Image 1 (cartoon, one colour):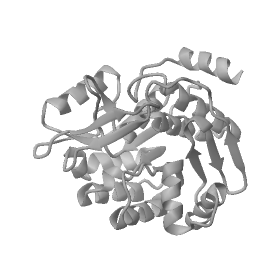
Image 2 (cartoon, rainbow, N blue to C red):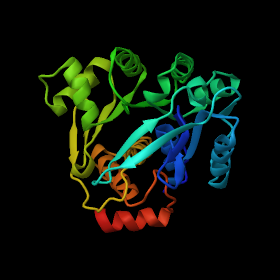
Image 3 (cartoon, rainbow, N blue to C red):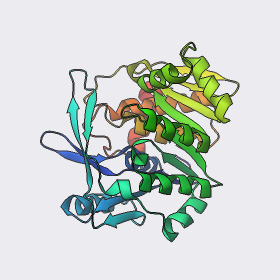
Length: 302
């Protein structure tokens, strides 16, 4: 990787993904920032944990992995968030997320204002905006962050009138979007049900003046759509252990390559590769090195 490091923020939830007998760092923005760091950029998590054992364990885990905790607030009223993860026969996760937890009360402060003005890119999602407090903080951060590239990882957990309002507001604040095929179907059925996949993404790009839209298709690869180009990437044949966090790794690779002005086909290829690689492990944030990535690229991309 090149020596030019970008400052990339995962803004929103940090929590523990809890499997039957083990727990892993979780929350899409936190996973994303971790992978940005692994790829050679400066990944920064902006979130909030409880003043409890799980919160301290999260901070210790981040310290051990050399990720900054400077922008993770401590909440003395609400607990650290957790998600119960259940894997089906295809290693696809199903989630039960706790509510009214610390990340729902992320507060705007001088530290976050400074970070917003100095970030090169920011990823944000829908889940962390479910509470009015965190939603206002996130949207203020994005408005302040005038020089950063803002990608909206839609990451839906359900659909109703309130979620739709959050999605619509978020699209206005975004420079690009990332979603999976299930999420695309939800949005399309709500807004433009007659359009096929690529046409619907082009509709979103035009309506919200987006730089690109990324559609992940799991084992079938991905589609990247720009204002004047469509790139489709085939899936990589692997035997997954756990697909939790594959989309977060995909998003990190996507931004890593986009900030370096790589062409869409190269971005799609590498993002698809890293997303598939993460599925070989249990948990969303396995450790890997630059040499692991070089070997992976050689094996699958030539």
